[in-house]
Image 1 (cartoon, rainbow, N blue to C red):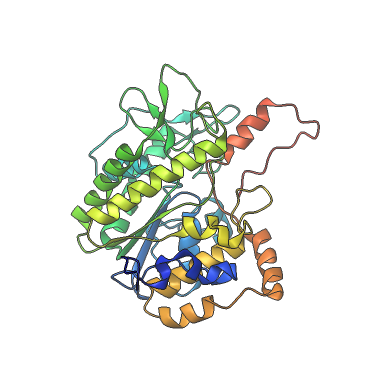
Image 2 (cartoon, rainbow, N blue to C red):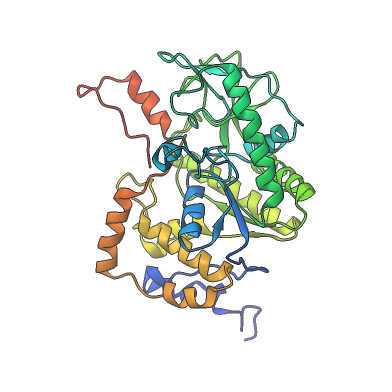
Amino acid sequence: MRHPYAGVPNRQIWRNELGIRDGALLDPVSDPPFRIGRDDRIVTAGSCFAQHVGREMQNAGFTHHVTEKAHALVPEEIARKHNYGLFAARYGNIYTARQLKQLLERAYGVFEPLARPWNVPGMKGVVDPFRPRMQPGGFLSETELEADRRYHFRCVRRALEEMDVFVFTLGLTEGWADIRDGAVFPLAPGVVGGFYDENEVRFVNFDENETYEDLKSALDFIRSVNPSVKIVLTVSPVPLNATYENRHVLVSTVWSKSVLRIAAERAVRNISGCVYFPSYEIVTSPHVRGRYFGEDCREVTMEGVRHVMDLFLAHYTEEGERRLAASREPVVDEASRYIRELQRKIHVFCDEAMIDNAMGNQAADPEGSQTDANQ
């Protein structure tokens, strides 16, 4: 009997997916309307997972565009400790679409938040409430912070105006906002700086409409200063580290990721030259049977990152066909040992993980140690 599914491509039928037989063969990626060349300047932003994209693209010989660099006389190790090179500029993790929107508005002088620099107990300096972990030890004074912020905003503007490709990874819907003007912070006051006062900040959990409107506003803003930029959206597969909603963190994770996925899909359907890459789907797919998460059921393993980036390079770059053939080879045990070794060496800077430290400081610890803040 004739029906509308007769003759549809194999990718549209679940049982035809090669990943059922071997998770390493999973490939849910559709080819985009553009390809990325080695000379294209790529700017990444977003959650912790976004750092993998920039690093892996650079390792593969592509141009991870960095505009905010340490002074030439600063040793590479010191520059890395001060978080130069993680992203195009030292904006740190941008978890929500509202954060992205406000960063753009702040960089171009459209929005000037009322929040003052945060003090940190036991530290003489101050930290920037909008990137509280970018400067180890904080800034010596508000004057130094303001000077660094002006330079930072110049670098943000330059990155936006010079980039050829913008990759944004949506990570969270929950956040904390200044009651006075709605300025959103990457971390709640009191976690790594500042002091929590419920009369000054409020908890927010952006729904699908708010997230989409913020995302669309941000992307429209970017297009206003860079009309030809290609835009790639992804959703981070990393679960929430903590939720302020009165429910299990897993339930909040599913809700948040669903909201982000809907917002990304709406953006792709309504903004030209904007595509979605399914990193979330690859890592969380039942085809890989959970092996792309570490022992904490949250950290993405290097094997998972490799699968994601192999498919990204295969489908999104000009050399994609050769990479696609290589990425479809099953992962063997020898490679797995190599991946485990890499996993121990990879450092991902994650603001959200500092919640663990803050919680640890409130609990008894007979060893006097703190939870590792890194993924």
